[in-house]
Length: 189
Image (cartoon, rainbow, N blue to C red; front, top):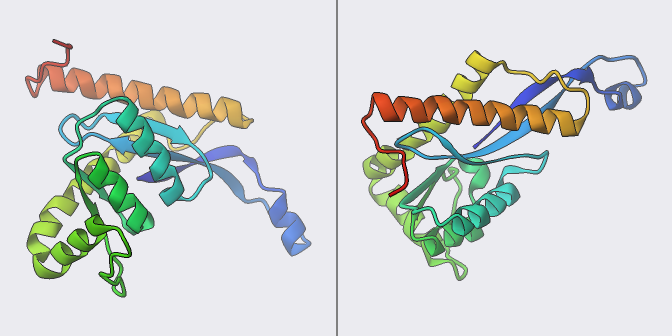
C-alpha cells in the first residue's frame, strides 16, 4: 500500500497554474510491502509513481530477498493482470480489490481469472483474505501517530532518508513486540 507524508515546503506550480498565489503543502509518497504476522515492513520505497508500477518493483525485491509469499493483498490501485501473474509466479495468490466493472477475461493471465472467479463466487473467503490489508493501514497509522505524519527535510534526499528512518524505527518496535509479546523467534536459524 502507499501513504503520503506532508513536507514543510509548498508547491509553486499551484500558483503558476491558477495565476494567483496559493500555498499548498507538498507531500512525499511512501510505498510499503508489509508482513502480516509481525506487521513489519518488508520493503519500502519513496516515489511519486503510481501504485501499480511501484508494486512491480516491490515484487522484484521480495523475490530477490527470497521471502515466502502466500497471499498478496492490495487495494484497487494495484488491480492489473500483470500484477496478478507476478504474485502467482512468487508462489502466492493475489487478493486485489476488484472494481464493480471488472471483467474476468484473462488475456493470458490465469491468476487474474482465478482471483476474479473467487471474488465473484466466494465473496466471504475473498473478504476474509482481503481483510489482511488492514495490517498495512495499521502500520501507516502507527508510523504517523508515533513518529509524525510529516517530514522536516527540505529536499527529496533528506525526505527519503527521514521516511526510511521512520520505517526502520517502526520495524525495530514491531520486532521487539514480536519477540516479547508474540513469542516469535526473530533470530535466524
